[in-house]
Image (cartoon, rainbow, N blue to C red):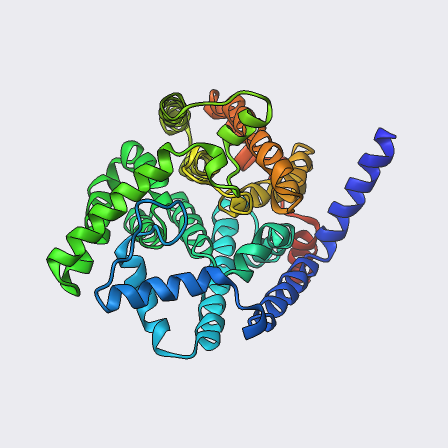
Length: 412
């Protein structure tokens, strides 16, 4: 049985080695279908909520309701980004926003693949390989693309940050994190990790956070904006301290524990989040001490994704796309190097992407992330071991079959 499974896995890897464009074809079809479904009869409420909140901000109305867990909860700068979309027909605005987000996400994943590819690969080979993790991420991307969720550009900007960090392009990395934070406050997790670990980014990130907060004052009445920030702060605190059952779509460590019969009150839950934040920092710090820029970049990216999905406030059962692309890219590189540990990561990405039901997702998906967290911890406590996972060794990092064939052809 095990031999049959291994043979099937080897056959799949061989197929994608020889025909890497298959992933790109599947991803292109997925984007085309997502764009075609942007229709008034299927217009998702998520993007409509962004437009409604942008309209309220533009007209000086109350944007945040601190008494509810739903409704808009991002920075005012996010709404200023969405204001131009309110000037056109809503379906046309949705098409444009989805197209931009899809292109940005695709480009960011490609840049990360290029940054993590073995040094003896040609860039065209790394680009070809990117189609595979994109294909694997279709289940995780479907709901987020359908709803034109801000999670997509935030995730793309975080991935672009990882690619820039791998190349030691600190200013560009800080810019992408500024954009990520402008799209969703959750990006603060990666900002804090990078600010604490990377001296070259520290002041740049302080400036980025200040810009996100202060830029709206150049466009809006100061007293009105100050009131919106006060309401936003109250709303975020309400979300952070709410019981997991208060938001039916939640899927994090608290819903996992509740499913196992352990109900946490607000203060113990907040204590666990803070302890997890410290543990996450210590893991990334270990990699920073002895790791290469590429291993540090991927460590910060996947640890941020794990923390956001497992310990972030009000993580939803279909929000795991912030973690799955980086995992899939890592898994793809491992499988091409004949590292079979990539298969469990691929399986995890698929499980995190599919929608089962609210009760199952609330327990299963956080449990999967917890297992991934544990595996990452076992690797990162030895920076050399994590670096080997990310970069392989001289023998394992040989170019894939299609690259070798292309190089031979070039010498003929």
